[in-house]
Length: 157
Image (cartoon, rainbow, N blue to C red):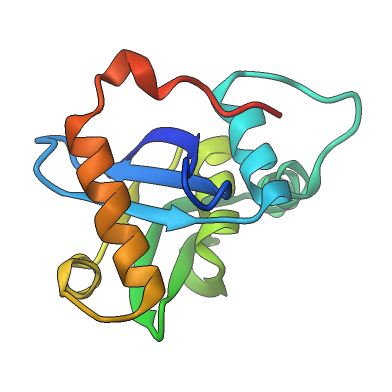
């Protein structure tokens, strides 16, 4: 998956990261906090800060211990909460670290690591539910399907 866009949900006025697969058949909206959205937006726009932000710090620590972020996987969706894992290789040892998806995405962008979403997560996100958030996902999904890519705009920091 790639980060296709970072937008503000036009209805809830909350930042949303839009992940899309290479074939553009599947997409996954993940609502994130303002600070996490800013961290993602800074990296997407190539903005460097005078001092390391938290995700830069984490990337730097991983590099200092001669590690690599090998991949990020959004691996679960329970009760409208997404879960992610950061896979790190250090000295021929593979470590898996639990993470919020927004932090994992921000780190993956900085480390140029691939981003994956488990098929079960995509299926759960597609399944119809009566919850308010699921209705928001469906409303956003329809809005995105009808939106012109140029009209998506950029997330404002």
